[in-house]
Length: 120
Image (tube, rainbow, N blue to C red):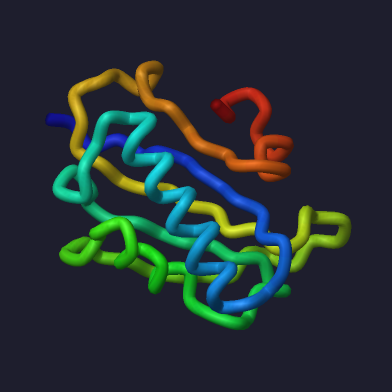
């Protein structure tokens, strides 16, 4: 198996802990499902949130779809003027057989505009 990175992003409607948990969990579940992966295939996951998200750690939402024995870390995105607000971005490192071209990157909702070249 080779370690690959799967990109993902989701824009939240509001900065509330329950909503963050729901949307980030949805993103992680979609990353796993669209790439035929399980939590066992994950090596590590990084979460980068825009500075306007302060209500909860996005990594806490990883426990919902069963990601329990995987290193997780949260970071803050740069505060760039004009950037899309309330976004959580993810590079998930996975052990998988497909080549880079076979990876399905997941950008949900309005976040699809961030990477129209790779969003599924």
